[in-house]
Image 1: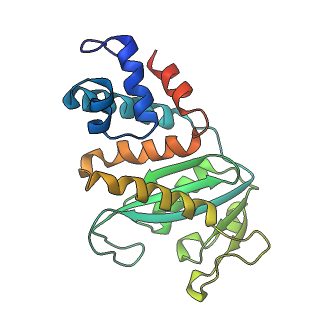
Image 2 (image 1 turned 180 degrees about the vertical axis):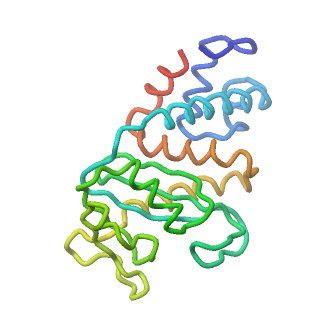
Length: 213
C-alpha cells in the first residue's frame, strides 16, 4: 500500500481517476483542491507502480507478432544501429493483444535478437520492416514476413504490415509531447506508462487501483 500522508484515501482515488483520464498535474490540482506538488508526488508513485507491474509480466508472446524500433526525444536521428541523439526503443506487439517496450543501446542485431528470443515464442509469425537486424529470424524458428517502407509499402493487403506497433509509437509520442520535454532519467517511467495505458485502456483505473491497495 502506498503512503497516504498528505491526502485521504478518498481524495487519493480522485487523483488516481484524474491520472487515468490523462489529466495534467495542474488540471488535477484544480479539480481536487490538492496542491500541484502533492499531485506530482502521487503521479510519480503511480508511474513507479506501473513500471513494476509492466516489468513483472514475463510470459512469452506468441501468435502474430510485430517488431519495430523507434526513437524518442529531440535532436537528430542517425542511421539505425548507430549512435543517435534520441532514445532508441524496441517494441514487440502481439496483434489483438499486448505491447512490450524496452530501451535499447542501438538497433543492431546483437541488441535486438536476444530480446526477441527471450520474449517471442518460437513458431510465432513475425512481421518487421526490412531492417537488416531482423535477418535470420527464420533460422531461429520464426515465420518471418517483411514490409518495405522504402517503396512506400505499408501493407500488402494480406496482413503483412507493422501498422499495430507503429500506431503505438504514434500514440506514445503524441501524448508525451504534452510534457514539453522529459528528463532522460524519467523517460522509462513515462514509456512504461504509455505501454500500460495501451495494454489496459479498457480497465486502467481498476488495474491501477488494485496495484495501489
